Amino acid sequence: MSLAIDQFTYNQDNYGVLLHDGETGETALIDAGDATAALSALETNGWELTQIWITHHHGDHTAGLQELVAETNAEIFGPAGVAGIEQVMADGGSFDFARLKVEVIATPGHTLDMLNYHLPQEKLVFTGDPLFAMGCGRLFEGDAAMMWASLNRLMALGDDTIIYCGHEYTAANAAFALSVDPDNVALQRRAEAVAELRAAGAPTVPTIMALEKETNPFLRAADTAIRDNLGLPSVPDEDVFAEIRRRKDSF
Ligand code: ZN
Ligand code: FE
Image (cartoon, rainbow, N blue to C red):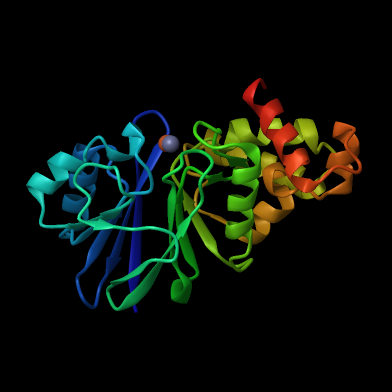
């Protein structure tokens, strides 16, 4: 299997991703927020689009879908409720891409329809907006308990899972993470590395699960130092998560 990945930017901070298999020629696009950006990335690579995987209904992930339907022959996978979806996916569903299995994991919280696309053989997951580098999505449609359960689903993927998420929010996420987890040396180091990457105009995405578990405060609700900092030494993890999310909303 010879997978190539092209991550491209659109809007202020969105990432789209093209996944291409050199053997079969199949190409998937993860999210369709900007048709022009996606078509230009396809043309640059000389790839023909065969699948689109939609993570959730927000416009910055779907606004270009109708144009891409018109311009390509791609088969459209995604949640119910998004116009143009041909293969409606839900938690536990799966389909094939280039003879690889793609498993669908639902993680409601940011939206109720949020889907992640997991390629277990390649140790790759495309998350959209529930999990970001050192961050997590805002709770627009679900609540903190729902999002905490969703993040636990993602944490159950292997530590060596490579994570592609929908936004470049990492520098702002690092600043917040340091406010609740200031003594975390791995976090301090990562914040410096992120600052250097952003100063050079380089992406901080993809990330990897092991690093998120070490440095992403939204995955670290069980951590005693964070709990002590928040003054919540003995409440359930989901309540610690809720407090971290609440603080981030007004950071
Ligand atoms: Zn979103
Ligand atoms: Fe988004």
